[in-house]
Length: 274
Image (cartoon, rainbow, N blue to C red):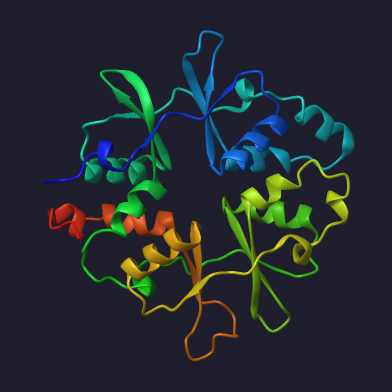
C-alpha cells in the first residue's frame, strides 16, 4: 500500500499572531525547533506562513541602525507568504514531493475535509525515506556542489548576507587551507539576531561541528545520519582527503528532489516498508 500524507505528517500546528514581531517570531521558531510558523488572524484562521528564510532575507537587507529599527517593527502579517499552500491528508506522498519541487515549497498545511490538522515538510518525507528500502542512489549523484563558505574570522553580518543572497540555509566555515571546521545555519543566526554584540561576532563564535558523509554513501545512509543527528544537511568530504575543501553539501531538499524525480523508486511505486 502506498504511503499518504497522514502516514508521515506532524499533527497540529505551531502558529503565531499576525502582530508578532521578528524577535518574537525568532523565539518561537527556536523554542519549537521548526523552520516555519503558520500565521493566524484574530479569528484563529490560518492566513499565511513565515519561515526562517523570510526572517533572514529581510533582517540583513538593512545595515544602518535606523533601517534596522524600522525593519524590526515589521510584523508577521506584513512579512508572511499568503495564501497558504495545502494538501489533503489522504494525498499520496509521491504527489506531495513532486509539488514541493515544482512549487519550490518546503512544507504544506495539511487539511482534512478542508480543516487544518497539521503540517508536512521536506524533513517528514525524508524521514520516511530512512525507513524504506529504495534504489541505492549515492550522495554524489544528488548533492549540491555549489556551496556557501566563509572563513573563521568572517563577521556574522557578512555570513548572513552571503546566505541571504544565495538563498542558502547554511554556510560552511573553513580554515585558510579549505578544511571544514564548522557549519552555521539560519537557526543559529536567529538565536543571536537581537544580541547587541552581533556586529562584533565572527563565524568561529557561532559555528558548530559539521556532520560529514562521503560521496559514495547511499541516500539511505544519509537519511539515517540526518535523523540520528536531528539535522537538515551533511557536509560531503573526500574519503581520501577528509581534511581538504568540502566536495559539496547534501540537504533534505536534495534528497527530496531525487525522490520526486522521474524514474525514482517513489515514482515507480516500488517503496516497501522495512
